Length: 259
Image 1 (cartoon, rainbow, N blue to C red):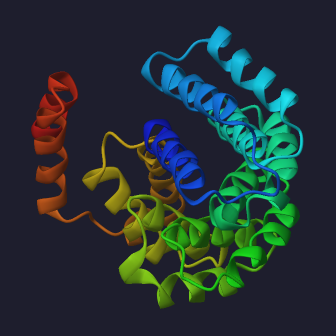
Image 2: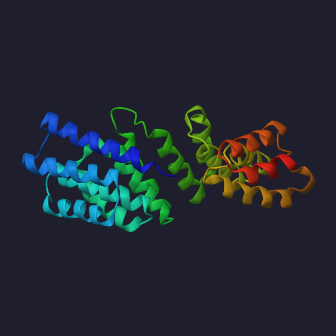
Image 3: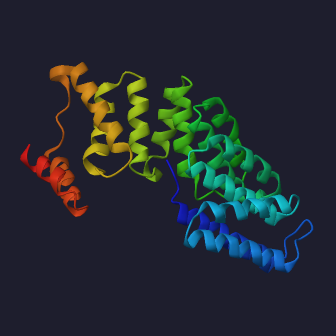
């Protein structure tokens, strides 16, 4: 599960501006350096490259103790996470966290996500309680819950994960919510319920990252369940074809309508 890079970088740019406007500082960097940092991030957002990324890294190294250096390290951690460099992301984010308390939820999201990339789910669960102490509910709360539920499933607490997911069902982002619900049900050997969740991902979100996982899980469960395998809803099947057509995936859409 990933946050779109453009959205995260936009949030970061707005935070730079907020620091400049409020003068929030433990010893603010001089104005030219601040402007330089904003320019570096803006240039990278417009056209990402290794050279521009290295420029942000140099800026972070040159500002080891102020918020702007911390924000540069946060950006590097976020980008490393997106590039599947989990260890690099963890190093940058841990360095940035203590200086950026108002970005605690975003730092926790990326830090927990990086630990999940390494399949270190105990570490995921150790990071997430930091967000429970925030004075205001984070806009990332549903995504953080998905990460927590996945970690609980992987560490043998699928029932606790399922309960948390049910309690927040209306707020779950999709299709990630249905995908992790399916995993929880399957871990508890509730195969019919797992199939329904996997079917929603497969038929209603054919272009998602989770669609492939759902397809493989459905094939496995169909073989295991035999005649007791739940038949998918016909409207879902039509919806899948329509959504593939809308995405201009005509060959797969034809296959869907012909079955």
